Length: 186
Image (cartoon, rainbow, N blue to C red; front, side, top):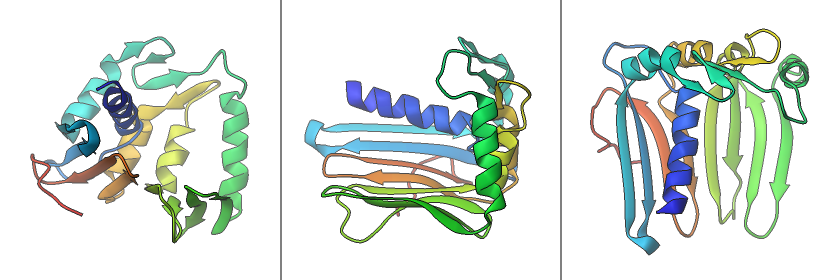
């Protein structure tokens, strides 16, 4: 279950970084399935709970919905500047990774940042995040990432499917809808 816990932690961190949307009865869902180990993890969290818990989070480097990066090779200022350059390019492809297992491209189009698989990829990664969410995350000051603002921006975006990762062993999916169960199939 160690791998599932790691993936769950990553998914919950991503949710905290901005997985919310407009409507009073919205839910964030995380589904992790690993048939090889007969593991299933399903998490259903009301968006209102995610928002209300953001100010209470106080971990090393994170306080009240703001992440501080001190001991890293990249400063938030550097990341903010890089994001500004990416944002100024408009619709463009920035990264393409092709090898025997993965065929993925990272691009911006029509107000979204995408990480999507290309044909013949054994690892299927599909991420869609509104550019406004990334803008909001970088709205903090100094070395701060503003996760609370990112949650609010995603809440207002109307995005439903956020992340899907499939490989030969497991499937991870994060999405938002009006249901309090994860019965939605894709």
